[in-house]
Image (cartoon, rainbow, N blue to C red; front, side, top):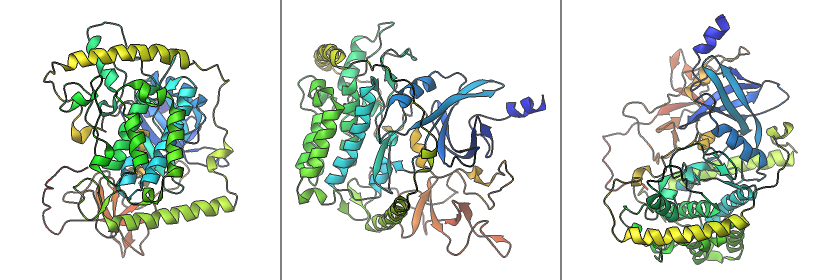
Length: 510
C-alpha cells in the first residue's frame, strides 16, 4: 500500500534518477514534447551496456506510441534510431506506454550547422542521409510527416545523420488519431498542396489529408534550403506574404544561390527540385531517387563544392556568417570525438547497444505506394488547381508560423533532446547507492548570464546559457570548502557574464 502511495507521488514528467521503468533505470532527463518525455537510461543487467533512450508518454494509454513502435520496428536504416523495446509503465493513474531506442550522441541539424562552416558537399551528404532514412520509411508504407531540422541529429564523431521523432508518423491502415483535417506537423514545412486541401475541405466533418512521400520530400527541401541559407523559403500558407510563389504554375521560392552565391549549382538544383510546386516533380515521390541524386552530386561536384558556404566574421545576428573562433573550437572537439570513435573501432569495440538485439516483428507486405501515388498525384493536381483559384483572392489571416518560431511546433516528444545536456537531476542519489555529487548545473540561465550565441573564446552553450569550464577542478567543484562552480558531465563550469549590458541586435537571429 505504501509503495503504491509513493508511486502515486512520482510525476511521469520528471522521474527521479535510479527509478526503474520495466528493465530500465533512469540516468537523466533529456527533454519534453507535447506527448512524451525523453530520458537517458541503462539496462538493469550490467552486462547489457548502454546508454539507451527511453521515451515515456505523458498521458496514459497514448496510442501514438503503438504507431511509432510499429514504424520503428519495421524500418531498417543506418539513419533511423533502432527500437529495442516497447511496453507500458504501470502507474496508479494509468498505464503509460514507452519506447526504448538507440542512444544517438548527436546534435540537432541547425545547431550542428550553426557552429560549423559547412561546404556544399557536406550539405549534399547530410541531405542524402535524411533522404535514405525517408526511403526506408516509405518502403514499409510509412510517412514521417514532421521532417525538420530539430528532428535530424548529426553525430559529430563520424558525421552520421539520423532522422528521429516518428511520433507524428503514419502508415497505411493505421487509425487516425486526430480530428483535424491536416495531420500533425510543423507549418513552415507543410507542402502547398496540404494547405490547398485544407481550404477545399475546411467544412467537411470527416475527411483527413492523406500525407504522401511527396510531403516528406518537400519538407526535406525546406530543411536543406534553411541549412545552406540560414533562412526559410516563403511560407506555403496562402494567407502569408510571399505565398503566391506556391500557387499552381508558380515559380517557387528564390533559388538558394540567389541568397547565398556560395551554394554549388548541383546542390541548388536538387534543393529546388525538392521544393517544386507540383508534387510529381519532387523526384516523382521517390526518396530513393532523391537520395541517389544528392549522393551523385556529392561525388561529382568540383573543388568549388568544398569551399565554406558562409562568410567569416563575428556577425552572429546576421544570416550566413560564422565566427572563426567558435568554428575552430568546435573543430577541435570534433577531431577529439572522431579520434576516440576511430580508436574504439580499431580495438574492435562494438557499439554498446549491439549486445541487445533490436526489436523486430514478422515482416508484413508493406502497403504499396505505386498505385496509391498515381491516385494521390491526380488528387494533388486537382488540389493545386483549387489552390490557384483560392489564391486569386488572398485573405488576411493570422500567421501560421512566425519567423522566429517556425521550428518550435513540437508534435511529439522531440527526440532531438537525445543530444541535449543532462538535467540537474544528475546529483540525485542512484538506486545502487552511488551519488553524483556537487552543485548541479541549473536547468535555466542565471540572472544576467550571457545567452547563446556563446562566441567568446572558451565559452560553451549549456542549458540555454554561456559557461566557462573551470580548469584543474573536478566535481564536487569545491576548493577549501567553497563551491567554485557547477558540476556537469564530470567537469566544473562557471557562468559567463557580460562586462556591460548587451545591446539588442539590429536584426533577427538566423
